[in-house]
Image 1 (cartoon, rainbow, N blue to C red):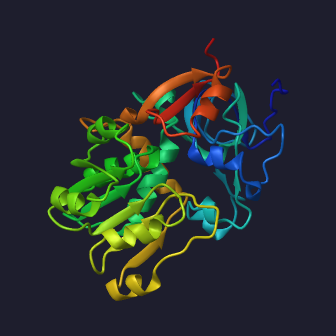
Image 2 (spheres, rainbow, N blue to C red):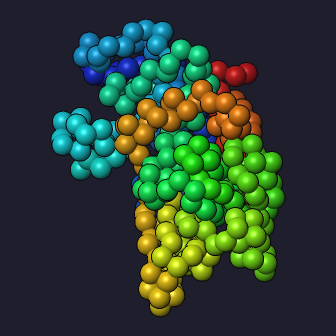
Image 3 (cartoon, one colour):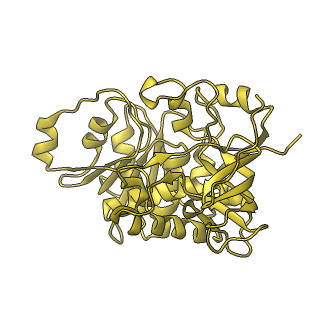
Length: 321
């Protein structure tokens, strides 16, 4: 569809969008009325771009800066925002706008990309930050055995951080092997399919039951399944976005004395760490990218992602032919 070019407010930047990632939550937003998405809304919250106009109160940005965007827009004035935690501001809004050629964004949401990190890669900052926040919420210790349930982009980003932050072993499990090679390229030690031998194969791969299990799918029943896999007094971190009521075997959970941690969004300090991690070595987060498509190709690709495929993180290039 055609839309008018956005006009930046005095404390905003106008960006020429370079890349925008297709996120699983975007798929949810178009299916579940809880998100309040209306026809004509422009989605896309994992994006980066080039500054083409600077508002008069937009701070130390200039035309031509390459930036990436944190989509959690807070008021900018409350204690939460001033701590760098706009996601927990009472007035927080999760913005879209990345599935377009131009987007107007509050300057406080933007961070300049360091020299050598391209705007094309900068779109990965948001999903990397979500995964990092989950790792830090878990309080993973050096040598911990980590299991990731779900080999989507967030699950694989968790594998990247777990390896980078000193996990003793990292295993990924999924119902398909579509992402096995990608998981290994991001730092996993093993990939286990979800079959009747799953628990035994996980123990064999990690040298024992996992200390921490990350649920990165968001389907009912999976938190309970993770509780069955973790060691006694282990931790479950729920990163998957489940929008319906879930259930679990509370007796099993309490007898194992597991800790269940919910994790969503990230803070601006984690966002900065994720940006720096884009300049990585052997286990590069760019391995998440499976394809780059044009705006014209976005609708069919978006619909295809509702089913499990070999795609992982698909980026949109709004200026591609």
